[in-house]
Image (cartoon, rainbow, N blue to C red):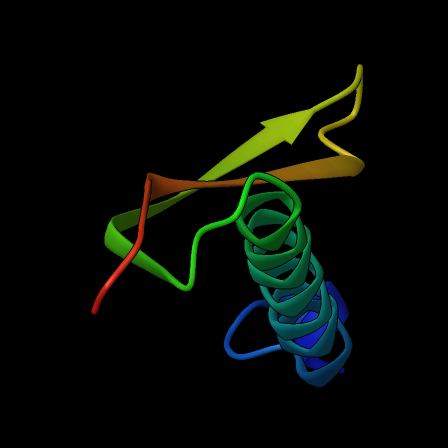
Length: 68
């Protein structure tokens, strides 16, 4: 019902969590691929796209570093 009338939507919240985790995992993989062992200054951005606002883009960015 919250999907129709507003409030916290469990399905929408679940999709946000899933998208955030996937973005963070992709960022970590790319860091490992270039030889980093940590990422600092992580920023996560959310953007609603599509004609009806039916698509979600999550972007994770940060600086890959080597910590000794």
